[in-house]
Length: 343
Length: 294
Image 1 (cartoon, chains in turn cyan, brown):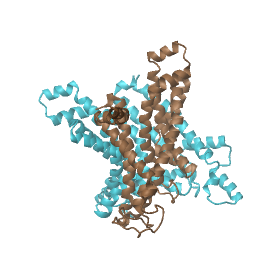
Image 2 (cartoon, rainbow over the protein chains, first blue to last red):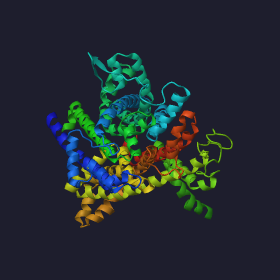
Image 3 (cartoon, rainbow over the protein chains, first blue to last red):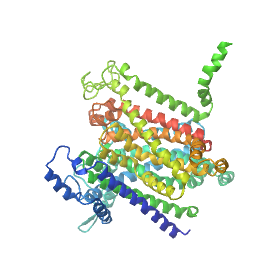
Image 4 (spheres, chains in turn green, yellow):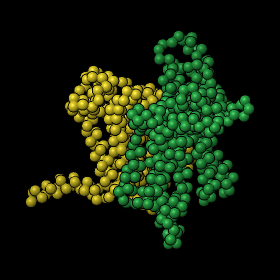
């Protein structure tokens, strides 16, 4: 199978999965509670107001019409209206997403670096106390709720040592403007990148300081699976002939492990990064809540407090679409790097 | 003589699984340590009404936000509640939610996995598509959405967790059944005229049980962490129930005052319980799958 046909097949396989998900979320919001409009109001409400409320949100239309409105809306990037103030949810989603993306990217770096490094050390020192300790670390991270680790980090480094801010994304009143060309500013919404584009080192320092604790918490919790994966792959790779040959040629142990073996054991890590992206987003919801990080997860949790079911639906759908897109890209990248999987 | 018989008849068989596990290296040790952690915490929760020094939900039993002392070994929270008593009894909700969600997962995931993969064809493809769609989705986000719709309550929380984890059961059972149904002994049973249902339950299911046990054990750990996560985002049970997740959530607001003990001990309990189940699951997985034993 050529790469092109693989991409086509993979895209075609993604479509029914996404459709199923969209349908599931649509029905969940409308069928599970019975009437989301009535549920939204905790107290009794004037029936006339309820009729107007339903009309404003389109909840009075037949279910099938609502379904197609919802699907065509999504195609236009319309995620529906908030139950609280009837504003478009997409605006909130798109403004909060860069914060989540920045947190996810920084956490990915930490989880891969910690995971691959510890996994390599464990494989190198196979069956020693060091190896066992690293394996226990892997299991412990699996059992560690990210918000608990976050709270511990806040107490230690935010409150007692004052090394990092205990929450928030940036010092109030300061926001990196991004790249400025003439009068216009082009900002990505990723504060670290925008500070760099602006060339403001003070803002860069501040944004990294705010980003450190949340991404450490999420990155460490997610690193366990990479420790295990790298360790297993390295153990297999270290037994292969080319490693023995490299050692026989008198290359240094360090060069053989980090230069030869690790490169080979890295491909499955890439696939795992794709698989873990969903977990990363789920972890981000809790991390953002812990650190008052103004991302999508925080927005979702805020909306729960307001019983804003249409907004909850919008965020859940957006998360689903992002995960589907990322796993598609990772699979295609993997097929490009390792042609064997296309056959 | 009779003493010997008693020893052989009662004590040795009782101890044999433990001693044989201890001899099975890291996997055996993981199972032993994990099981001990889970049993200890379950026992602690069960006998909590008798060992708690104070009423876990009684307010002002001590001074507000008192750090650990001889009178209150784990300190008190912002309502003056004794943290030791809350730690003793706070696991009940976790256990209830986890057990219920695992039962729902078993009741739904196992039959669907068995039937769809044994029958094959369109049934299998459709079931796989549905399960893969749920599996690919960020679990906690889905659980949050369902729990937000269903409202609070042990059953509702367990249900929202179960929806997220049913695909794990389906996938593992499917992969096993696809291999087992091609084995000669299953074909032989088929040739001898055994009915499909009896093949499924008498010949295939017993071989899938070890994998189901492993997934269920790991599912316990996931269910505990997800339940704590749901409480953390405000979808837990009412305040009147002592719960480690609740203490961890509301303790967050007290962090700026430096009251570390309010979150440290409930958090540690959640970690220990989830770790106990994880060790148990990992150990079982290595024991049943020696190829992975590295």
